[in-house]
Length: 292
Image (cartoon, rainbow, N blue to C red; front, side, top):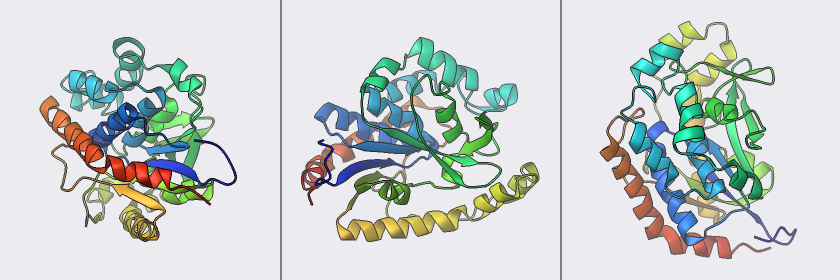
């Protein structure tokens, strides 16, 4: 799209949700196949981990490697958690898979001028950290890993003196941030169905114990459901105004956060593809109507 002061910039906002992100991956693959583009993209947690493939143009990569390795104890699960403190293994998920088994195309990433942002949470302040990911020279996959590091089952990721965890703790759906930096017309991909309302975290006792040295992080996690539900109300308002188009599943997705059954991953991915095809012309019309 032409970068002009007379044209409103468009953004793509990707919620996380661990393996619910296969829904998002299905949508993004259809977008790539059909030539749907945006001025910038921002992803949180799984939205960041799978969304980077949208910038490289690697259709099918996210579903391919997740189906291939979801049952592999080196990839995810209790063995990985006990081995290195991360339920999704740092060495295997962010080392072997993208560098050896299903290679991430950093050259294509660098050549695509579309900015790709992600969100992490600063453990010491409890505040979101918004970062434009620069590719391999920008700390390898550490920013992606930090954005996706779920509390309680992941180690903190330290980058440039900051201790970071999952961006969903502090800003699960960063629409307001994208609007604040100039992306006024946004497609938002959610991974929960209509009428969903987040409840208070049932593991707060363990959160308070583990992160007792980080009271601001604990506070952010205590308030996460409140912030999330208020953000959904804001998105609904922006959708009514015509400046946001929301894509979400019609019902709860048939997948767990750490899914070990490849057929469930594929089913979730296929739901995303089907939804993208169903909404494709609506998305095109939304993007084509960008004007003064």
